[in-house]
Length: 282
Picture 1: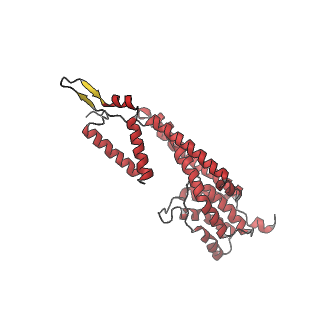
Picture 2: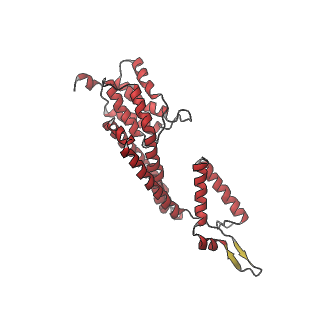
Picture 3: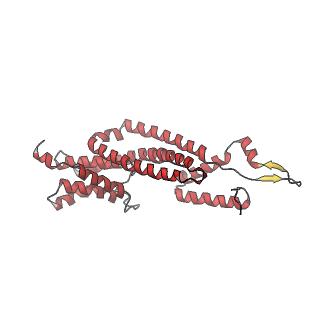
């Protein structure tokens, strides 16, 4: 390794600083116009300052490559930042990498990483952790909430850190895997697993029933609506509510928050008219 290559190397301390800026700042200054652009740019500042220490104008020119729009899954997105750090190091050593190449790389990885991350993290890992936490929270125990907070924070930090340094180590070798046929197969497999996990959590923790009972003049129940529904299609109301949520978010693009507000409204109206009975005593 010649003197120039040694000079233009990123040390572990600088890489750690870059990662921490991404971890804590990926979603700061977030807007519909820029998304994660500023968090990404901020994480690259230590890299630029390390590789181009003597020329401020050169730093400004190099950092300009990171002002373009950027948005992906913030958990798995750390691997893109690590790959970028490796490519920036290669650019500083005059290996033929330029700002356009770096922009093309991250633009090409945003979608695949978002697809993998949304399926793996939001569709698989989080439901599994929440399912475990819900089981531990029965009878009002706070253990489940503590478990989720601690385990999630540890997995989020050290998982992202591992991906960041793995991306830096692999460099452009990781790009071919993530956007090639293997990457598509991984995304499809994770999507299937995520759907299975969500279905398992749904079957375990979601239970919608009605309390509607019709009585005759003597006060005897001659129609129990829930029992009748169970003879036709067990957990029918649960499936209807689930499909309603899916339709609102997937087809009508209603946010998760508004979907929950709608469900609360439906529940309140149902309790008032006697369709639902939460079993509360006043």
